[in-house]
Length: 283
Image 1 (cartoon, one colour):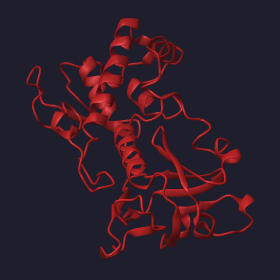
Image 2 (spheres, helix red, strand yellow):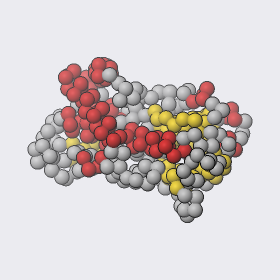
Image 3 (spheres, helix red, strand yellow):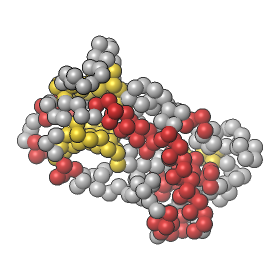
């Protein structure tokens, strides 16, 4: 699943390509479960509501993409496992996994007449339309924790000390901190030499401040490198990210730890896998 750096890269790509554009036509090929429309639109379809709307802003909250439209409406997108946005020429053959196609009104200021496609081969992604007045009351947004890049170290320490749970599941909990997933949790814990099952309340203030610093450093580095491409992720232009070249723990099961030479292991912790060095990151 794309995490904060990947979603931020996509958001920046959308701003650069479709920001300020006006939708002309929207073609929906997605199954009904992929699309959600607020009842306050009175039964209008997803495509009908979007037609003629200007894209006024593109923001990110955690792993969510929020596309602000004229008329105080937001298109809220969660990519889930395999969702993508691709900005492509309209004459490119339509793929069977291109579930929604956004065509834009001709704009003399635009350097191209490309259109935007939402592609999702596993079809877990969700596209939702809500009036701005209803948006932040929705499940999936209202309970999100703080943004890790905006969270002061003291607040991070207080959140960890205020609960007693394993640190890896805590970092993955989007109500605890929004945007971190398996990749950057594993990398930050490796950098901090913290075992993923350590209880949050058992970690010293010094160690938690160190972890906080690594989380922010790694997220910023990954954003600069346009994210991590270890599966299907790419930006709106189809370009892969580059952070995978710098992974120390995630997806490195059976390879040698760069610090001590011990083999990196993969272990299921809670409902998710964790990659760590059993020597550097002792329980």
